[in-house]
Length: 75
Image (cartoon, rainbow, N blue to C red; front, side):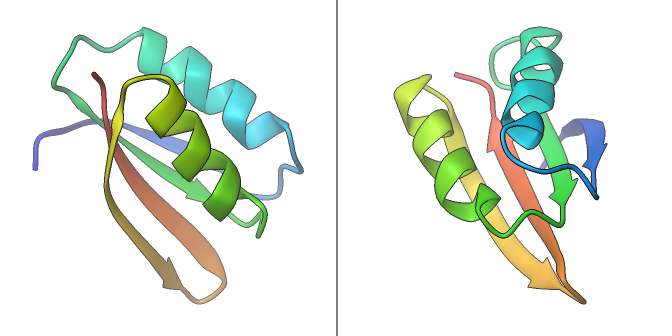
């Protein structure tokens, strides 16, 4: 996985993880991967739906010590 950027959205409440993710993914070119770290439990559903609706691909999701980690490939 070619991770180009890591976004630290820990401690931010909805909708900020999505807002920050959208801004960060706009800086990437198609095919590049953004890694997102957040503590907002609602982000699991939000980011999954957002990626799909934006034509991006959620490659992987994991939860580690209360931190949700997402890997989204720009479409």
